[in-house]
Length: 306
Length: 204
Image (tube, rainbow over all chains, first blue to last red; front, side, top):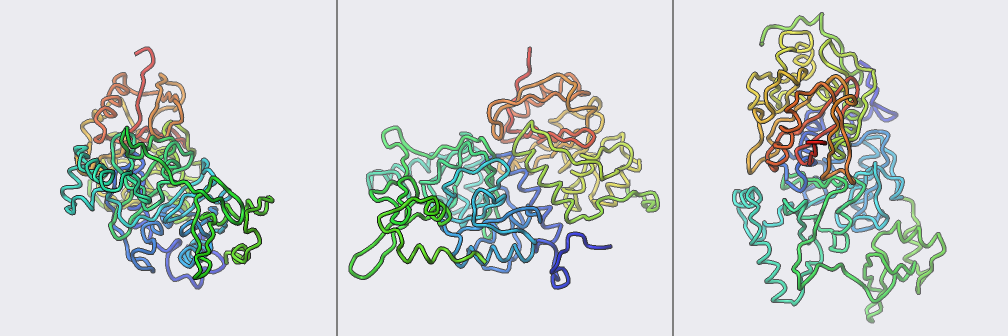
């Protein structure tokens, strides 16, 4: 039988399309459908050995491998950047094993894989956001036994989580965890949004795109369908709030983006730049200028993705 | 039910299983993520009598040796059964509660939805996915869906369903996190009503 899925590099490819074998993909696909039907619930799946270590995005890679086709356009970011080592190598991996076109442009991507960030540009229908999750269980640091956390989710026993948040308020005076702030999905399942900053939590709710979250080492898949209620946990007197900065992006001047602090020397000089590298580059191209525009950091980001 | 298959009678499935099952899955995924919307699988696939193109695409994309399948009695012993067994390699079961997937082709004689596997409190993902083949997705009594995946509300109106069907679906939704997930198919078209969808019966 001729292999129509093959491509230019088919003779050198001694493994199946998109790396995983078909039975594994079917197993992951079934888990994805159940995850979408029960928003926020962690579906166990038979996570496979991948050609990168656990912690490098094996959950997200398996999700992408199960859904990707040659017509997709794939974007991969680490923190917000397209050009970090992990992002570049995962992007090259899928270009090689799945013949997929890659991009840095959020708006042309159909699959966006990420660990720490959701792009600044609002996602739209037809896009799938794949998040790599290190610890899918929001209750794990409060209750180490999986049998117990399963039961807590089954019977919606989330008091312990609120106690933990209260303790945080009592100790440091505010509720924010910074990254991985727990959310309630459709007022039923408590969910870890993966280590995205609390800044990105509001993007999960009522999005037009599908969110798939995968934890390779912990062997869990969960999902947030489009137009789903996602509420970041808080208290009436300590409402949930996202991070804000006194500075604007030093390169593009953005005042509404998530900023990274960059240390410039050992004299205390620093700058704040957009974490989302494509968002920042696009704004600079459109003529937006920040206080340190033209800095050499802006040049570094012009290197092509591949 | 475990009789040897007559292989010469079995019609082909996907010409390119890898590519076509990926395309089929993405359509199913979008449909499940957006209840009430329509997916269409085209007419490239020619499954045996009793199975429409959409049901056949779902079967080829999702069934294998890990998924016990409950087949509608109308399909048992037919070419359709042999086709599913051969191409999917799935075990068959006559116990609805043991099924990972159910293929229902006659909704009027099918067991009640709650006789399928509704999942475990700790593992609600173990419930049955019901592939429900109906005459048409358009000409029946309209019901209104809302909930996750639906922007405001969306109407679906499949025909050929028993009168009690949408009541059963409301009960199914009320039991959330338990419940079956239903893929309603007709010909090459599919629309999904997962357990998370709230159902409003008009005039009811």
